[in-house]
Amino acid sequence: MNSPALSSRRTWLTLGLAALAFGALPGASAWVARKAVPEPESDFCLVAPPTPYDPASGLALDAARAVPRDARCPVCGMYPSRSPDWAAQIIFANGDVQFFDSPLSLFMYLGDVARYSPGRSAGEIVAHYVTDIPSRSWVAARSAFYVTGSSAKGPMRAGNLPAFASPDAVRQFAAQRGGKVLAFADVDAALVAQLGGQGGHAH
Image (cartoon, rainbow, N blue to C red; front, top):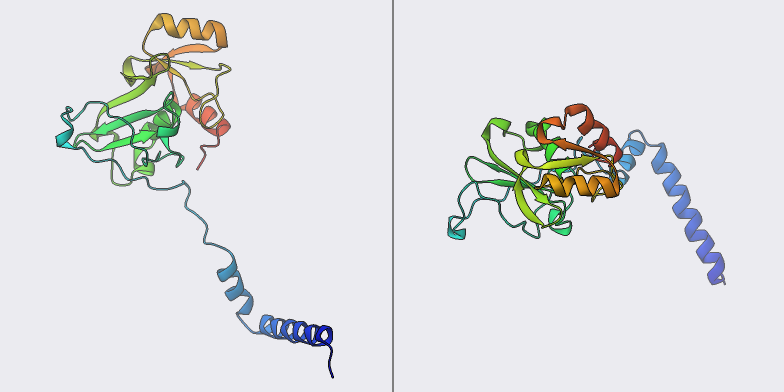
C-alpha cells in the first residue's frame, strides 16, 4: 500500500511534468505571461473625473468649493481631502472642478491640461484656488505667494509649493523654514519639472 507521503510526491511529480509539457507548447509561455503579468498602465496614474457644479449649493459657478472625500487628484491619484493644508482646485467654465493634492500638482496640471483631462484645455479654466497655509482658507492662485526650497514637505514628501495669501505670512514662513518666496508668475516650467521629479509625480 502506498504511504500518504509517497502519494503526495507522485502527485507533485505529475503536476510538475504537466507544467513542463505545457510550457513546451507553442504560445504557452506567452499565454502564461499574459495571465500572470498585468497590462502596463498608461503614463499617468488615472483619469480622475471632475466634480460637477451643483446649483443647489448656492455658490457662484466660479467660487471655490469644499473638497469631497472621494475626489482624486488627476496628476497623482491621491485624495486631496486628506491633505487640507495643501489642497488646490481649478474650475472650468461649465462649473466642473478638478481638485489637487498640492499647489505643485495644480501647476503640473496647468502645464499640460489635455494630458491629465483628455478633451479639456487651459482656455476653459475660469478660476484657480490654493489653500492659504495659516488659515486653511481658499485664496485665488494668481494672487497667492509660494515658497520653494523650504523644509516643509507636502503630500508627496517634496517641496510642494506651500501657498500663502499674505506677503507678511509668507516672509515669516520663509524666515523660519527657509526657501525662496515666489509669485504665481514666477513658478516656471523648469521649477515645476524639478519639483515634480522629486515628489514622484512623474507619471
